[in-house]
Amino acid sequence: MEWIGFYFQFLCEHNLSGFVKMPGPKYGNVSFDGFYDIPWDFKAHAINTSSHQIIVNDSEATANAIQEYKAVGLILALGEVQYNDEKRTFQKWHDNLKGEMSQYVRDRIQRGAWSRLRKVSFDLQQISFIKITDDTLVKCGSFQTNFRNANGSPRQSKVLIDLENIDQGLEYVIEFK
Image (cartoon, rainbow, N blue to C red; front, top):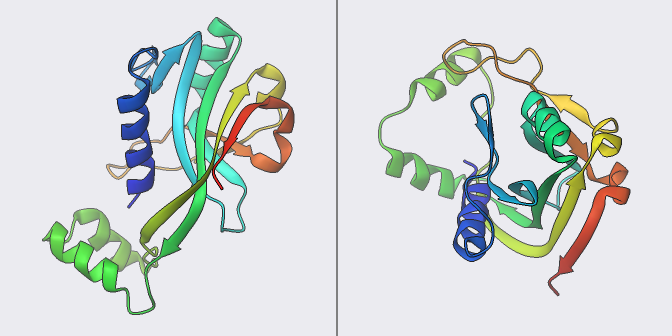
């Protein structure tokens, strides 16, 4: 479902491996994607959506990394996403490729929850390098508080960044036109 994020992480690992240590430091069960002076995470986000919020990493791991290194970084790929058509052609192909329905999908159907549209393409527009310090972290929200994992265990809350409120943390932007 989140192939864009996995593909961007693959590109970062492939292209940054000469000077960024990968993976980065680990806090509990959470590893940062890379390390160069500070821990870094690699994320991708659709810009043609109403949400300007990015779900980053585990809140506790982020706070611990900031305490140790004074900051954490986010390499953020922003681009336009094309979603599945109304007939869900891509989703049908994807479901056929996956084979048998997972327990997660069966549980979703039983709950009556909707199935998200699949992302078909991603047109990269910009890469942003965002440094998160204590000053920017206090402006961030949290996501997944009181959520549960598929196995029923509690899920750790994650840092939620609103791109419209993070301008002072934005270190560098590369735009593709």
